[in-house]
Image: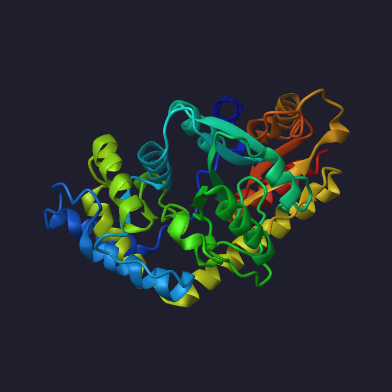
Amino acid sequence: MTRLCSEQGGINLGQGLCQMPTPSVVIAAASEALKADHNAYSYPEGELSLRELIAAKLLASNHIHADPMCEITVTSGTAAAFTATIHGLLEPGDGILLFEPYYGYHLAAAKVAGLRPELVTLQGPGFALNEETLRAAISPKTRAMVLVTPGNPTGHMMTRDELEIVDRVAEEFDLLVITDEIYEEIRYDGREHISPATVGDLGKRTVTLMGLSKTFAITGWRLGYAVAPPELSKAITLVHDLFYICAPTPLQHGVAAGFQLPPSFFEEQRQQYAARRSLLCDALDRAGLPAIRPEGAYYVLSDVSRLGQPDSMACAVELLERTGVATVPGSAFHQGSGGDQLVRLCFALPMESIEEAAERLGRL
């Protein structure tokens, strides 16, 4: 869809590129690191100074106690953290539970690792986890599950009740729990982000994956981190070293400055995203393409069934041709037919781009 959008000169609300401004202090710190010749390899687990800042942030914001010496691995993006985790802690043939609608990278990476994806379908518009459905999806081969909160593409934020279900089921079946919390700072209407590792006994079996790409609008820098008990972290660091050597050293110094931004930065960021969410969702509703308003992250799913197309790809192409707005077909997040009448739109763009997209959608 990005390529089609470029060919037609459209507005790309498809791919989650995050075209928001990067904090100037982060850019300045990275620039200074380059000038200071911090250009050699870091430790495979990342610069200690950054890991110490991450540990302090985890304690203050997430209520996670993590030893920076042995429980944190700085990675080449959250995607690399996920890849290192599944290759380091699971074996080919193991079953891994994904919640549908899923983030496509998780499915593809699991397949490349030789894992067996097992799907738990969540029903919109709320996409809440149901214990009966979760239990029904578990097979004798199931060894792990992946939680994405806030969700991509749904924007759903898992509640404590849902995470208590995960705690019970994971304990009973001795499952590894892998989280993707990269959108933790982007949430709406005063909602609280709950890190799964803090609920019940999940901490002992959870690998918490977080990232800096979305928070600081540096998706091209490829920086994330994995947090896990020491023996799990050891394996994750080993695989990350083998696949990636280390995360980019000067950029690690750059993001360190971001951890010292005041709370007002994150609150202002949330307000900016909330304004974009309202503008886009209102435009979709007026166009007869009802929006499923996200609780977190910066995506919105839209019901495009009124277009009368047989599948979501055809819907996405029609939208691009008629309005010049690119979306992602809902089929990208489903194995079955659940996404056939949905498209996903990203609103992490300058406000003028969202305003123009809203005006174009009005042509419907």
